[in-house]
Length: 164
Length: 224
Image 1 (cartoon, helix red, strand yellow):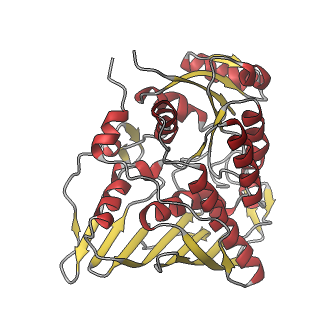
Image 2 (cartoon, chains in turn purple, yellow):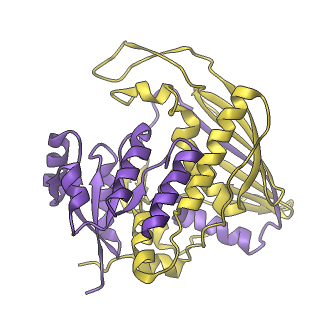
């Protein structure tokens, strides 16, 4: 059997369902535990997806967890990622990764010291549509790109929600 | 926002706002397509100082807005490309494509980078705009039922790529360097909105390696 790394989640809110549901599509990872300050949230997700519910402290001390996914609110991202790295685990964070460059550089130092990895969402750019655009650009299909126009307007009401 | 999230306050406080909430999708995609950013400038506005919650259970409650909800930004990339980036939670309807990319020989219309799939449209010079024929990429295959129809959702692919990177001793694509640079760009946009000055980036990064159709397919677990 191919080797897999054990994955635990801190923050069992809305977006955690997407990770628990979609992770089994991929090689290399196995979802094993979920933790949340609200124990009931962790228990509900654990039951739903057949993993174990855990306290944050137990999750960070677990030998079978290699990577911890940080799905807390943006304002907590830095402190939680710091705790994950200091516990000797790789961290993968939801976006936004941190709220300042200084916080990010501090996490990098902590990770480098222990030889750990840091990763962060979004990963939608790995999607077929965006990789296709990448191949068009890299293949010179529209020549050198000199300009672009990007717009993101969120309708104030009635939009389909997809985030946290 | 206030029409769907049960506790939408944080969207309208510092740390929220459309740049930090939705900006990562757009700016990360720009950096993977074009490369790192050199400097930014922005105008920021708060057209509504108060929002009314229309989701349950706090229907009718008012929220104070303490971070800009409309931002017009200019980005200059290290390779010289110039970009207009516009994000707002104050617009009812608009007629713009999510991303339009202008090259010397043509234009590419890029679908919403909040999603993995979608139609890519392209034109060369004066040709008509055409929807490109299907491209066989594992992470474009619709796999989830949504209100708009079947959509491709491969969230956690970045996590899996990191795990495989660790196991195979190679770099991962959703890297610290990339996300830190995106934070630099977004916080720079907000700072420029406050100060009225151009902000130079303090970080840079390499473009993440492309993910070819063969590489994407190789990441998928075999179906049981």
